[in-house]
Structures are given as C-alpha cells and as structure tokens.
Image 1 (cartoon, rainbow, N blue to C red):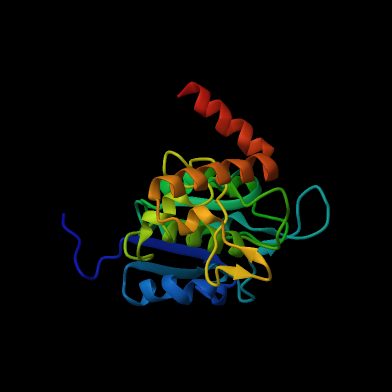
Image 2: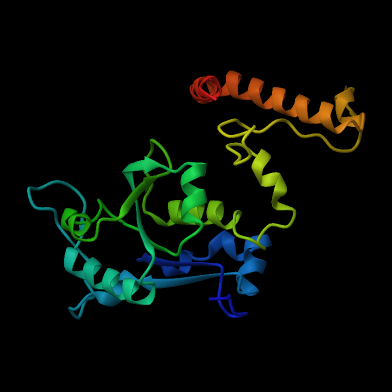
Length: 246
C-alpha cells in the first residue's frame, strides 16, 4: 500500500514514568524538523496511568529483601497491552545492562519497524514481565543509568538518522563510524578538516586539497583503519577477520 502524506516512515511509543523527557533533544535540529513534518512520529504513555489504586502506586519492595523498589508486573502489563494495541506490529525494546549492545547493524534493522520502548526505573521491572512479553533487551554499554529514557532517546536518534528524509545528503552515513558502506563497516570514522587551510601552523593534509577523488577515498579509508587500530583494537581485530574471510 503506498504511503499517504499523513503516514510516518518511522513510529515509536515510549512507556515511561517521565513522559516529559520526550522528545527531549529529538525535538530539535533535523530530527525535530522531521517530527514536525510527520516523517516520524513519537507518542508517550505514562506507566503510572495504569495503576489501579488511589495513590497510583507503580512499585513495591522486592521479594527476598534488598534495597530499592521494583516496578509491579500488573501495572507494566496493563501499560504494555495498551501500547501494543496502538502499535500492534511494533518491536518491543527494553533497556537494561543485561541486554545485548546496541550496534549499527542492529540499529539499521530496528529503523525499519515501529518500536515500543519500555523504560524501566528503580531497581528494575518484575522478571515475569519479560517472560510474558519477550522484549528485545538492549544496552548502551557496561554502565548503569537511572532509567531507560536516555537509552531510548539514544536508540531513537540512531534510528532516525537512517530514516529517509531526516538527514539530507545521507550518502555520507555509510562512511561514518560503524558505517554501513562495505568499505567502512566496523571502522571508526576518518578525521575531518575544514577552513582555514592552515590553523595555528597546522595545515590540512595535501591530499584533501588535491581534488583527486580516488586518492582522497584511499586516504580516508587508510585513516579510518589506523584510527580503529589505535583506539579500538577489539574492533580492528574483528574488521581484520572479516576482511580475511572476504
């Protein structure tokens, strides 16, 4: 079915206790303009709205003892059920240090589908929610944040950069760090230079002023390889293994 003028190319729904945190930085710059123009859509649902007692209680102390509070499964389940009714074909994503790392190939896949973003708080969410709803658990890295809102915004930002119409001149996306262009897949990005041609005695590399596009392309690839080898030897080893297989 062809896309209508009112149908966004990418849709997301955030389940959170702090809906005012969205769209946050994504309401500005290119992502913000694309949101205003209907290229993508974002809705929030407050988990607290699904609490059933007069105090709107969403958490309780953990069984077995320990510090902190845990989000109740009945409340979160009701919120998820409502969210899935709004976006029935969406991928459910939950953010946790236990999740798999967010990578560019994964982002490229997630950017093709609507997303429901479950943002936990406190000590976490009752484990039975994960058994019931089977979310995709994702992590920004080996550190702990206060909630899932910041990872959700980070994932949305990464996805939106791949959505048609959000970034103009998006051919350059393939040459970024972890770019999707075959030559740059798995590499960190090469260094950039702009005016003036000499700054504090430091000149721009001659090759970038040469106008020879093939030499510039070769220089940039060599620089990306060197930066990756120096700064992220783990990425370099993986890149080198893939090149040997090819």
